[in-house]
Image 1 (tube, rainbow over the protein chains, first blue to last red):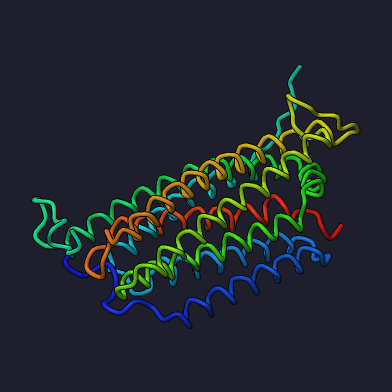
Image 2: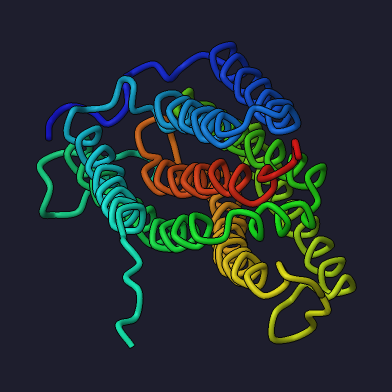
Length: 103
Length: 215
């Protein structure tokens, strides 16, 4: 716990603006992909781009890239629980067999 | 009041330890927030697997252009609050305060745009239980989409509203030189909260506005 939360010198202005430009480019990419008939890849590309945007925000704006390991673990655990919640719910729904009524 | 040591609570050895404990507490809170919205997203997933056509039809009723602009506004506001924190860390005060006001203004403009969306949905008769005038085979399950839409975006807007108030308080404190290069923990935690609000919206955008657009 003795490692400082943030590094002595904060990230540069240039880095912030590059990340913002990347986020806005990804936003336009996801909007563009949504208009193309890609089938199941419409959903996959939209969610994949959202994950990339989230990682950019967490790594650079929330400064986890240089954050202490404990904070990175705490952040990862939150999303791991979320993955368990949604993953197991979807697994149950997708494998459910509708049984016909016996009478 | 400016130095980190003057703000040190007695249970901590030094300012760095206090700041790390605060950040860890905030990240734990953010994990509970992610799970709070996660339940709504899980409900959304279950309903969308069951009624894919109704969710695509519901999504086509939302305003994709406005949703895209709202996303861009929130992403920009996240960058602004990160820059405000950077400025305080470098010993700045006025620029940081104005950046925080800018962030709050962007958050407020997001709420206004969303208000317009809600109003146009009310006029179109897309609010189940209040004013729902849709007809056809998909009208029934489409109510599920709109219920989830109002719960997810409603709770998100509530978070944006709380964030706007928090950012204005931080802007006032920054302007009054309550923070310095040595002590800026409340500002850092408020920024983390605002980034989480942004991240939630990053997932709301494709799930609400981008479904079934190609068809």
